Length: 152
Image (cartoon, rainbow, N blue to C red; front, side, top):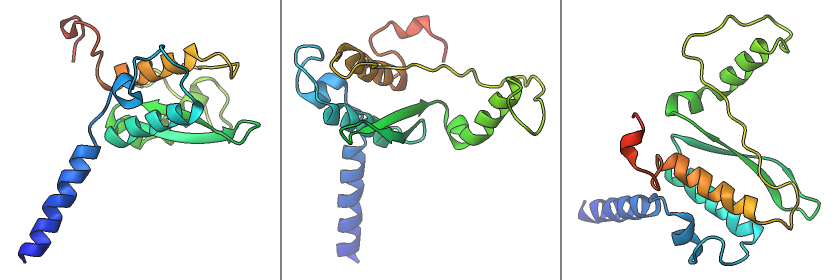
């Protein structure tokens, strides 16, 4: 019995220790913008954010570069919205009159959708680093700013 309890405590410790969100600087081991950050580290950072905030962040691979590297997108929202992404997508198509089934009524409280796109050219690294700062700031609720300026 004690052995099972000890294993459970150890697993719980490692899960909670690994679930801590790290800033880009902490994750990379250098101040963002001071070195070139390779694609695999950027993807790993996004995976770390998604793993530590899985209720609010979902990653999806939508393709590959011509060199076989993953192209990813991230969804960042409330846990409720993350759980109903397909429903939100379909409603958005209806609002734009692009759905084949029917037009959607204007829904009170429907979430706003903001699309941020980074990197058109693979050799321009500042936008990838801006993407890391953006997802971190969104998930951490604006850690670089005075939080009293924002309503919870």
